[in-house]
Image (cartoon, rainbow, N blue to C red; front, side, top):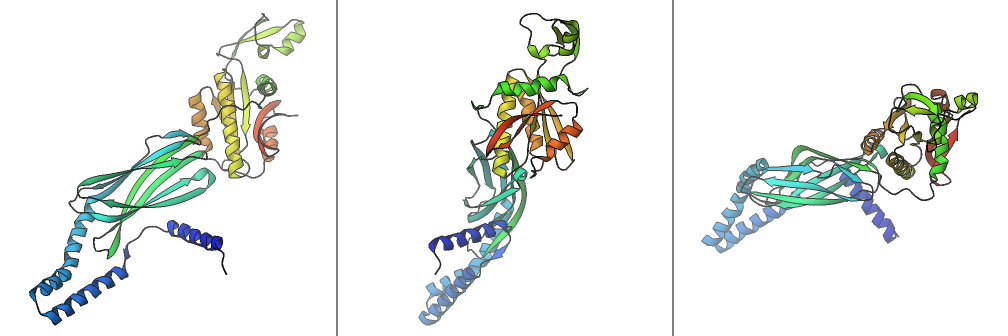
Length: 368
């Protein structure tokens, strides 16, 4: 004997399978059979009673489908749908809204308009659908605001490819094609946890700053001078200082001579990668706010190389994350370490955000 939970699981699986199917034109035989039964009853009642009233009832029932067909054609032509997202950018774990507007320019009504709303987060290869059944009045705009809880990062793509409109007698649901789409970018947004030690990260920043690739630095050295109290230690030219036996400092053109190389690992389960991205965003945002420029790297499986973006503002950070959402998740977290040493041999150290001991962590890795 099946348990209640097993029956419930089977029912939910059946509902999910139903939602995966596209909307299509459907004839409803039970409503047609019910109509024919009513027509037969009216005919026999008229034949038995032989009065004018039953004759009128019989003819009304007989002509009704023709009237229903004509009005349905006018309704079908007059109905359209619009989909929009008022907020194109939202934060993770926030609630956003989709606006769905069902417009009827005819003077007719329908009590059952089915709208299938598809949603996809391509970064996590996740998709789902919702089926909405809406009535529509004559010459009206039926607006529905749909709340969405964004629990994962990524680009959410919403689409309505078709709706089905049912006639008043319920004989048929006819498909009408549309191509309405809306996109919402979801970005991580959280305060940097206290357990992330920024001073440890400075080790990676100091090492990488000295050995940055030509053409990828955020500033150029304009002069070398003697150390003045108050100068940042990261600006000290250690090799020249050792030769002259006095501290020498590099003057740079840019606002800040600090920079950090951060590699975000897109490796693990969907939930793990989501936590890695969230921590990467928080750390990078903190550094940008402290006027520390960041070189953000991630591995691209499609291009078989590292993608690299210079982050000098929060706008740069969001644009970089939008590009990350088009990358692919991989399953070997150690693969990038070998690629880093071969592609960036000049880096003595860099910061890596990855899963460590069951949670997302910031690690400073040194290269030989």
